[in-house]
Image (cartoon, rainbow, N blue to C red):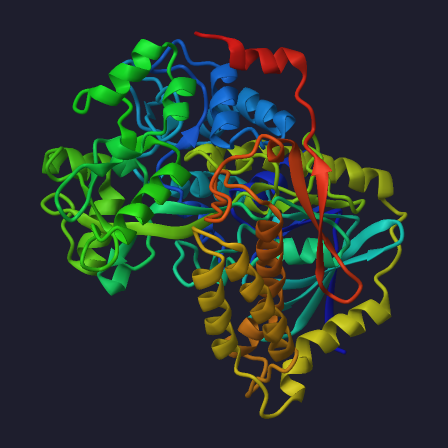
Length: 599
């Protein structure tokens, strides 16, 4: 077998914000670091996070602090977040933003010259540091520039298909160059997974082609566990029309800057969906709650900025009630609320993107939007301080890691999450590599040969299943049966289909050669997509309540008993998934007191 080999201390899989921040920190801790990315450097999905970075910097609201941010995050996640992760995130996010600025990020400014912050759903105060509606792009530009300046090795257009280990822990990773199909192996005691999410398992998604659940699957195959995979966030506002932009995200900044949601009758329907419990918990007093509900014009926190799960369910309800747009969505209108000059200044990417791709002018007309699969709150079960998985030497950060966001992620928390925990993962991975340096077993020839055989198996079959047909059927299954509203009968049907799809995936065949073969790439992605799809469906069937990004039509209420339970997905020897219940880590008393404060 022709095999390219490399030696490192830390291998980071993924070059989004979490991966690059981990690589920078590991390098600055003295480790030899490699970054392996499926696409080109700079084309990470992080660039699609447009609205801003949530951090309690108090630049606009002096009352804001980490305790309020912590409280917002926990309440947004319906109290199922790992309290320690939410605490570290809220405490460290401001320093990570200022660090970005030190490295050259150019944020929008307040009149006083401070970093500007904007409103976002579920946040008590305006706290999203932003660069117009291109914040993710600026974040990646800054981290990418620093990564290159530090001389960190980057393997672009290279896919990792297996994380390698022995009884002592991680020994490296195996993958292939997408252009040539040639195999490559990295010998390293620490691997950081920063591969993002699982959106391509769904038919309508804001996610790009790379999001096939690689990191979730690699972790499980290495013996790690996943936590709370039932919680999938459907962003309320993805474009549903025209077809050229279907699924593309309309940033929450449109609503944060004054956009409102209307149904086909022209009614601003979100006022009908403010839940009483949310108004009372978020308001400082009952009088404030009443003012928020009644004041439909001037309130600084309009109902369009409820947490994403609430808005997505409201839109879904309007469409099902027959009050949707002609193409199955609702209208998002900022044109009647803001001047064209304001929109072009505050939302330049949104304006140019839809003008050029769809001939939709958001300064003069409303957009047709609807829920689209956007983010998975579940992920690799990690230690909150080090991001270490259950396998020694394996770490995870960003969307691929679970626990931080509970059952629902607040907008803006994703960028601060990947900065805070990317840094922590990189530092811990470097420290682990130091303890193992010179004491890591060589890569097993048998393991390498097995990984190569698995990768090449689709070429060995003739007349088997077409990868594109199988992908279509999987996406349709998840869209129809494990979507935004779920029932036991539908999820049982989904699991039956997934079992049948496993048989079909085992019989995939591709034609041609290893060079420039997208059918082969998809054939290698499909097993990962199947694993995460099964985890989502099994966990969603197990959790018999509705909470955050998980809505059961047959169990519509939120159950206090389930608020104390995590669901853990573990691999079986037969290649399946088992789900077990695990108590939620108990919050210390001094943090619990934050929820009793009134100001």
